[in-house]
Image 1: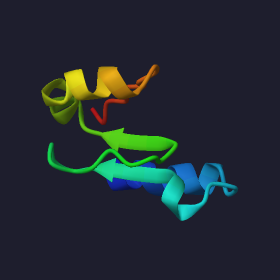
Image 2: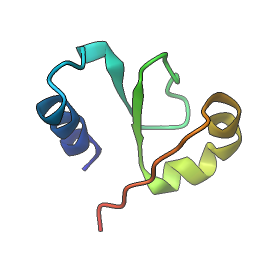
Image 3: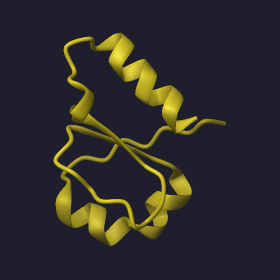
Length: 64
């Protein structure tokens, strides 16, 4: 479902460059300088400390 969100962001915001979005698939993925990171809720809970130190806002979207 993460990749569906990726496609939707680019459809809704056509001004986004391809490098401005990033899907995080596992905890070893690099948190790039992208504007938008898409992550599963399960992975979010595993990476919470790293995410808190790097981002001021995290929006969680459930696929259920």
